[in-house]
Image (cartoon, rainbow, N blue to C red; front, side, top):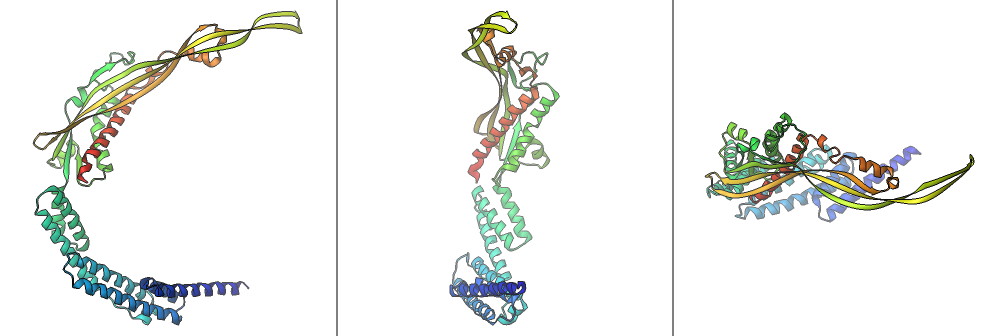
Length: 403
């Protein structure tokens, strides 16, 4: 029974495949009809109907593509060679599909178009190469970008050292090289303001701290920003370089972005206060008549809780000036980063017995309540992280005009 069932399934699949190939042929989808018929013949090499469909569909497909090729040969359009190449590529795909099945190959006897494919592939490459050279002769950056795209396409069709050399030349002329430069004030020229509670003893010598960890964060800022821009920018025609990279690769920048970390206000705070009334029913008198007879008298007591939410805010900014290669001013901007820390404490007036356990815990909080335990480098890290993100976003937005 199982064997009969399996045979029925196989027969159904064969019948469906053949009907599908026939349907594709009737609709004029000759490539699909060929593919489906070949698939059928791979399962049943004796299927006469599949052989007929493969043979007839192949002939129709060849006639259709040859008609297009003939029309294109009568055209003078620069794009005709690429279109002819695409037609021959489709014919070659049919040849390869049929040639992979010995039964289908014998039934259809397809033509190998590989020499035509290669011929028109090279002709297409030559067309794009000429287009690229013509664009390069215009001499402006926008044309060099178009030239690079044309030459890159030419190289895809025709791998040639001359094309590759011109492609590299066009790209070098098309790309905008931006040097990110930091002046001497970047590491030690900031100004320090604010209240950090004396946690760091003698204070901070400059705006971004004097600990080794903090100094490293500041020193790494430029590298982190360049890395962010280099690997996350979607514009292939704008390249960002740090000072070391530019020197090592002898880069002559088209634009220079001067960056200076300006101020860092550490730990300035502002308070937000709120008041609420609380009450509690408490025993105010207790009369004991005997051990098992106690009478309590209750009264309601009140208190007013004044809660202070203290928000510590540390802010830093980065001043940006962009100049061209001759030092002429182009644009400027300022980006900012911040670190916030919030704590709560409270005072009360009234009857202490009205307070809940959570009220008492809040009242017992110190006014700094953990802020003095926040590491300086953690504050600087967050400020720099936000500055880096904002700066990268501004640069990408500004240079998007080069897309």
